[in-house]
Image 1 (cartoon, rainbow, N blue to C red):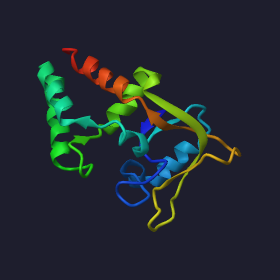
Image 2: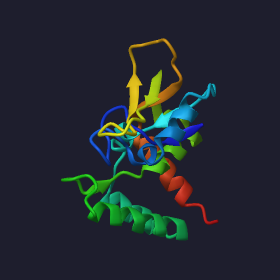
Image 3: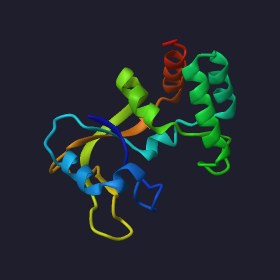
Length: 162
């Protein structure tokens, strides 16, 4: 399983929780504790390091396929919406997770123990990433991203006319 969700750092709907996990923390907890051998979490801590700039967005649009133009329009709205304050760029969260399946060089992961906070309150939905406790390493957490490989995959995929 490769999923976009959670964060090894901070959240986007609360100081601690990322939206996808926060929406159903109990389900996320069940999946992460299921014993499935290979689970990879691509969280905000890396998606926010793979921003697509306004100029890159224009280049995606100029590819001219329906997919590239629609994607560029979507990304441009995110840029103008100011998701990342002070940047003329935006993350494309789910695309990074998909790109990591296409080419595992897109992200570097570290195996660690991840659990999900399910108690009501400010930490509800938080993915707690324990990199120091080897009691039960259950998730490969993305900790670094190769932004250049990611952007090349976006160009290659969006250039396909399907």
